[in-house]
Length: 87
Image 1: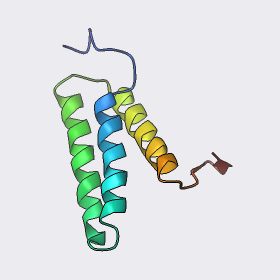
Image 2: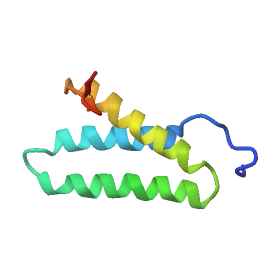
Image 3: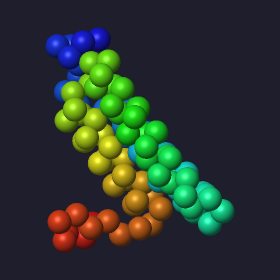
Image 4: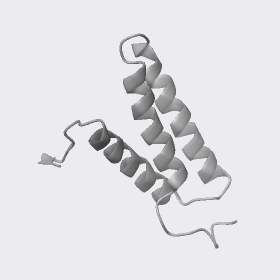
């Protein structure tokens, strides 16, 4: 798949990785609090690799990452505030 044939929807790869980061962060919050940066770094590198391999547009990765973070926050029962709007 090249960028010319890439789907114009948010990247589910980024969605899944950032969503998983939130769950791993919550799982290891008390015992290993410093690992959360490793989880987000890994998810970011995976997203950048998808751009480098021309599998997704940067906007797809960004939309997938933001959607994953939002959904993960909601599943964990946290309030999400974006631009002073509460969801």
